[in-house]
Image 1 (cartoon, one colour):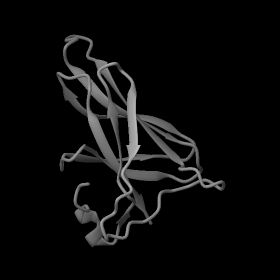
Image 2 (cartoon, rainbow, N blue to C red; image 1 turned 90 degrees about the vertical axis):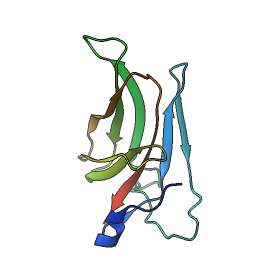
Image 3 (cartoon, helix red, strand yellow; image 1 turned 135 degrees about the horizontal axis):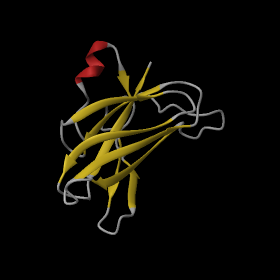
Image 4 (tube, rainbow, N blue to C red; image 1 turned 120 degrees about the horizontal axis):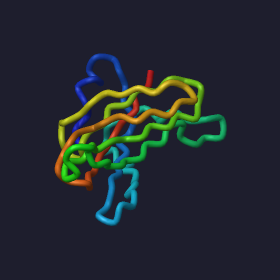
Length: 128
């Protein structure tokens, strides 16, 4: 698990890290990493029945002009009424971007552009 973001020191709490990725067969690899190691993290946003509000799915799409270069993207799907902000990173790196998705919205966000179709990512939700 990566070290806590510096955003925590400025009063913004982050949830536990969730990780996932794509495999060579194009399947989605998704797993949670609940080992917190003594650090207290805020809980994920949940709906009234306790399910996470946000689902994050990775996918890669070849660029139009050069099919050997891929847009590595995340599809953010929020099925709750509250806007959710996340910090998404390539797995085990500090190469991170902040994204937000409004209530009941779905949004595609590009994480990076690489000559590889497969990638791993992790994200944490900002919790107020």
